[in-house]
View (cartoon, rainbow, N blue to C red):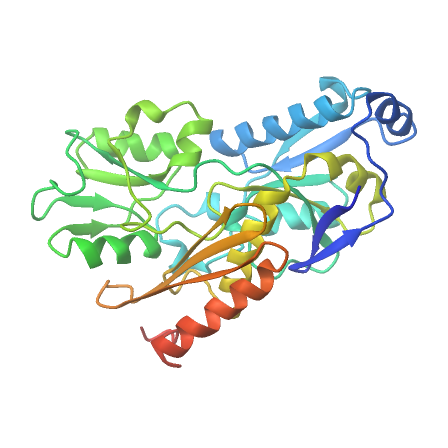
Length: 342
């Protein structure tokens, strides 16, 4: 089997890793590896749900592992500690990953689970992405207090969101509404909505599905109205670059289609040097066996200008496709579009 890993944002083939889909082989091979895997994760309900999913997949593919042999280690991140400010105000990408990365490099955990949309495009030295799990629905959901659809939200309706990407696209379509910062985990945001603090909020469909809270969704927004964040709905598991045991454990969990899609999206983001300071969105979709369609978007934070485009390429060259679309949109937007003053 040709396994796939990211190393500092690039895809590397691991041609020497044998197939472990054979249960007999798995049991024999894994018996010589470590008996306890420590999984680092944020402590939010969604993050813990995702970590438990990784745990179940490890036990499924490696039959000599039991639940007792996998330990979930919650770690509080900077993004979790600071709730009163938007991510763009306190440092942008990496706020939900750096403490987990530090624990990994210090060998306090063996692997770490991330919502891939929270990950910077450049990983710390010594850390690689060991696998990407099958992607959940990448779209955004509108949740309103009164069940009113996006198009029917009244003028001056208050929408709570801390995402510049979401706010800019809302303002581009509905400049008549008001946007206020709203952070916190899913239940916290839903509670604020229920209390009347806001009339509506926006959440990732993937997170609501994983938490079993699709009942609160008023409307799933089309990608024409709300292009998702890069890698939204995807889960990545990272490990130390030199940890051959962890790498081998993770090989069978990798989902090749999701890997190709998020590679294109992250290459698009990397080319634009994207951070939480600039609204950037992208979605790659695989059409057929070897064709990929990548949609990308740059926006002014106030929604006054949207630069959007699409590129078609081969699934075998996702990074090239992402960089090409990034260059195309940046040329159209102008060199000053990504400056902090915007």
